[in-house]
Image (cartoon, rainbow, N blue to C red; front, side):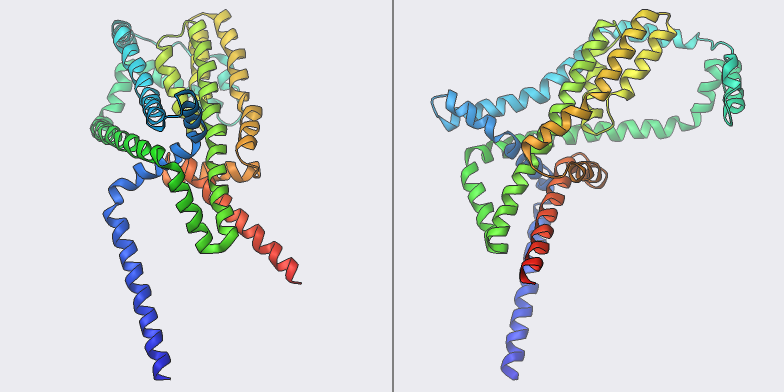
Length: 352
């Protein structure tokens, strides 16, 4: 009995010590966790691309890693440079439009607005109040919130600096992972096998497939949608088309969609009297907005053979829970949990 108690005490102390060691290690590495997660997702998703570079560059891993690092750097820097260049080139136009806003007067509300059921009268009254007060009255209403807005912009400016540092750290970690990717994959597979045998190793492989599926389904769809949407904005001669395209790309990745940019642009064209271009952009926008309904499922299925609803729940839930990195973390966690649960249910049926 005493021997059993001593063994129990030793086991308990060992578990507590190991748990404390793991928690302390994560606490020390906390500043690097976000960058490490991003680097892992990027390396797993783009590993076939790195192998393609290696096969074209005399099978030299160092050259392939350099090419991938340069590609990732361009993916970040080119949109940023285009956005800054768009602002600089259109600085005079932006200033002129800001001045024209000060003298803008809203017309009287259309007659059909008041006839809308339930909300028509309230909308018409609000329209008349804004039209009567003008821009000056609207600015007077917004003045109490100026301090909060200013503080928000200062906070965001600091976040942009932190984001840039995180990007550089992610780039360095991704380059290291590209250089020794096979060893890292073998370690992850061995860890999965140590935890749950063959099923754990399969779960690790499934996690990689889920990452590639989300990268194909979410990121590639976002790039295609924002690119086609930006082309429509440029054809319709919408101002700041490059900046709006960058905003569309972010909104598509965040699962908001391009409609938040395209439909206001359509309204603006109609408002300025460009009826023909407004109609063109409206049709173009409907095509772009519905594009993900057939493009995303095909791409996700190519990366991972998982239920589409599971992937969507993981993308949206992960985004809400963990931020942008949750777009990849969410589907991976749900995919592994779904596979393990399915295997556990199958084992129960076999035992009967």
